[in-house]
Image 1 (cartoon, rainbow, N blue to C red):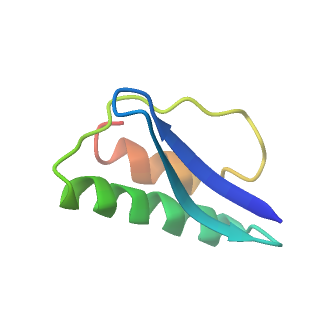
Image 2: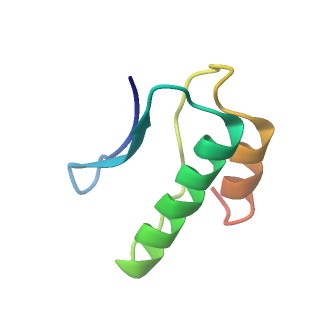
Length: 70
């Protein structure tokens, strides 16, 4: 099982974006969109995202985040 989680260092909060037995590029990109919606709903903004170079992060993942300035 793969779990996609984001740690907000300033708030000391962990956001679980989802879990799946078979992550796909579309699933990861949708999880990024959901994260941005959640942050927007709570009035928070991310400036940086640190991640590894795993192949499960498609170019669309970076594009979704770059469109909001991350």
